[in-house]
Amino acid sequence: MNIYRSVGETRAACRVLRASGRRLGLVPTMGALHEGHLSLVRAARAQCDAVAVSLFVNPTQFGPTEDLAKYPRPFERDRALLEKEGVEILFSPSADEMYPKGEGTWVVVDGLSEKLDGHSRPGHFRGVATVVSKLFHILEPDAAFFGQKDAAQSAIIRRLVRDLNFPVKVVICPIVREPDGLAMSSRNTYLSPEERPRALVLRQSLIRVEENFRAGERNAARLSVAAREVFAAQPQVRLDYFEIVDPDTLDPIEQVSQPALAAVAAYVGNTRLIDNAILRD
Ligand code: AMP
Image (cartoon, rainbow, N blue to C red; front, side, top):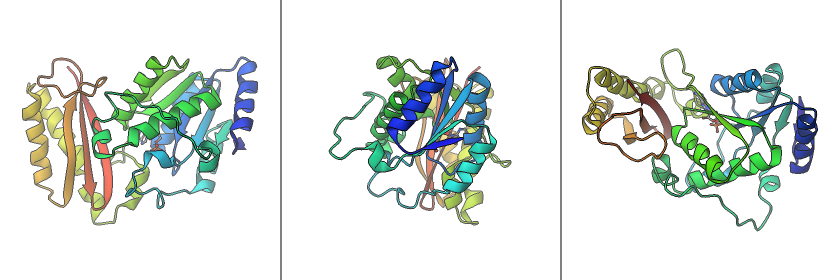
């Protein structure tokens, strides 16, 4: 595996690779890798001839009071995991390399960026859309792999690629969970031993909604009430949002007549976690 820190070297290496006729798959990450990330790497390996991973804790997607400084950065461990997965290119730039001084160009996906997490984290999706656009320009992948875990992010990237004509196939991979159902996240390491079991309430609320959906409930308001009841039984966890929305537009829906996204975010102590499920017949 070749490790690159600079934009120029990375672009050159990716171009050499693609010039030999190999399809390049990109997996963008912020590191602190877990099985969720590795599932994306494996999907990229299965669908492409070579895999590049970017490892960059993107400052522009963190708000001023968020966890940018304390976000875990176990570079050596990440490097070893990716080496074992047969990744060809690891792009791990500094913040200065990615954002030259005086930068002022942003990518904003109007209409989606302020929904769900974008509502609670103003500016977050502007940072995500901008860094993903930059990564697409730097590595020029044929396909890029993202997790359904970040459902709003997936919708935004699909829209971004469509609107700006990026020649990149976007592949969304299923959520990987811990054995007890908690969605894997780099932020799970923040949870104290007391908080860890409480975090299951996110998944439990989704399971309750899926059960009610399967039992025939199609009214989104009533489905959401059921989810809130599950949260009410776990008062130490603060619900940020529970919403049932169109998976493409992220607009709230009233009656679930086609596949809908049930999305949840909550604070377990100071740790903000998200999860979701697709409701479909
Ligand atoms: P992050 O490092 O948190 O920015 O995540 C990098 C990529 O991994 C994103 O596309 C996430 O959606 C994806 N990802 C994170 N957690 C999971 C998970 N539990 N299952 C599947 N994909 C995930």
